[in-house]
Amino acid sequence: MPLRETMDEGSPLSLALEPVVAAAETALRTWQPIWTGFLSAAVREEAEIRLGALSELSLNSDGGYAGSERRQLLLQRTEAFVPAQDQPPPVMGMEIAGNFLFDPAAAADFRQALVSAGAQDDQIGDLWPRGDRGAQAIVGAKLAQKLDGMEGLVRTVAVRFEARPLAELALPAQRAQRDLHTVEASQRLDAVASAGFGLSRNRMATLIREGSVRIDWKVVTSPSRELAVGERVQLEGRGELRVEGVSETKRGRWRIHLVRS
Image (cartoon, rainbow, N blue to C red; front, side, top):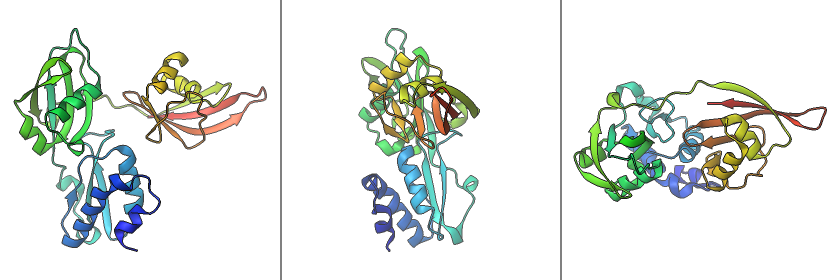
């Protein structure tokens, strides 16, 4: 079966996978390694599952730092394999500097400012606010060079875009993987996630309704959604929970084993 048909078969992400398929076909045809643009975690994982089954294709991913969510894929013929460290991704850091002392902004606000300045979605990697100073991001090298020194707006706050080497970024802290155990009255998302992320249940329910919580990278807005073993819960800025095990106690409650990363 042709590569494109294999990737499209039964995938709800077929449209988002098209640029990856095109890059894979080019890498196989030309024998030259190709970096894709930045991919969401859901698209990247789907591509890795489907393309990873091809013996003639080798894959690596990189988002600029360990633990990044949005990453690029390096696609190359297995017979012409070159170690990933010998062909780093074409990315740079971006400082989005402004005075947010009286008007704090969220990551989505800074991302929108990059889009308004001309960035495409696949040119923007991870982005993290830095209090009242603005934000930093990892972006494609061409975008960094294009925006360097330009001014823009984050809502109503004037900002300046400044390209930075990755080594000069204050990267998000890396979380050590932790095993957690909790006993809950149910397997509801709000109950399990509040225990795993260390937030109140009311706060977690609010975040879920606002669309800030995802299960296996898909936004879920129902706090009562029950979790199953193997599912992963993502909360921006707080990492991921994986449900490792669920067992019923003698009192009819649920003992839940989580791994937080």
